Image (cartoon, rainbow, N blue to C red; front, side, top):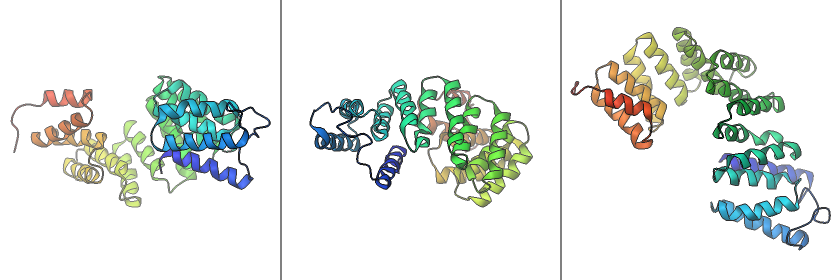
Length: 293
C-alpha cells in the first residue's frame, strides 16, 4: 500500500474505533457550503475520489475548503499534505504535516513525509530535526530509528548514523534495514572486513534484500574480491534491474575487471533512467575504447 493510502487508512481506523464521523461537528465549525454535515460528507467523498483518480490540482481547493471548515480534523490535514506532496508544493506540504502533528491521535503518521518535505526544500537541518522527532513519538518502531540514522547519512555524518543504527539494532535485532545501515556506515568509516561480515549476516537473514547484497558487493570490492563482489551485485540487479546504486557499483567493478562492454551497459542504463546523472556520465565519458568482448 502506498504511504499516503497507509496513512489515510490508519487515520480512518482510529476514527472508527473512537466512533467519530468528523473530528469537529458542523455546528461547532462552519462549512464553506453552509450545508451542514451532509454537504461536508459529500465534499469529503468528492475529494477522496479526485485524489484516488490522481486529479490532485482539482482536489486541492476542495480539500482546503474542508480543512478551513474543520481545522482540527486530522484526516483533512493528512489529505491536504498528500495533495501538496504530489503537486511538489513542499513548503505547504511541510506546514500541513506540522499542523497534523498537533491535532492527530496518531501523529507519527506524519513521517517520513515531513522529513522528506524539508529535504526537498533544501533544509537539511529541519529535515534532521523532523526525523529526530519520529523515534521520540515511536521509540519501539525500527523504521523510525532507521530514518533518523538515514538523515545523518544524508549529511555525511557517518559516525553519528552508525551509532544510531547500532543502538537501534540492539533493540530490533531482526531489522534488515538497521543491519544494512550499520554495515553501510561501518564500510564508510573504514572497516571493509567488518562491514562484509555484517552484510553477509544481513543476506543470510534476508536473501531477497537488494540493499544487503549491494553493501556486501561494495565491501567485497573494497577487499579486492572482485569476482564475488560482481556475483552479489549481479544478484542484486536481477532482483531490482533499475536500482541506480547497484548499476553504478556494478559498472565500477566491471571497469576494474576490464569488462568495458559491461561497464558501458551499466552506465548506459543509468543514463537512460536518469539522463542528468553526473557520476554515470563522467564514468561513461572516461571509458577507453576497446576492452575484452
